[in-house]
Image (cartoon, rainbow, N blue to C red; front, side, top):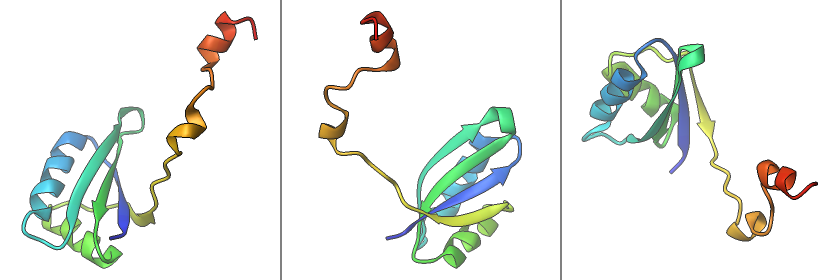
Length: 96
């Protein structure tokens, strides 16, 4: 099922996340996770749904007004791609 990113510019990311999670109960939209960006007074919420319209309905049921709803695709690197690489901190310690 596609995932959608909901952008909210407001203080109270925890309350917004809880409201979205409740609005998704017993619906065709599934709450996945939220990320708070306090320095920008912004929160990002990931929801699974068949359409952006379904997500917008869930946001409205939560009593929120989204600044933007867009389809999102999660990118994951294969485990092998990160093996053997040193972090910047490790490179400094190794003299590189």
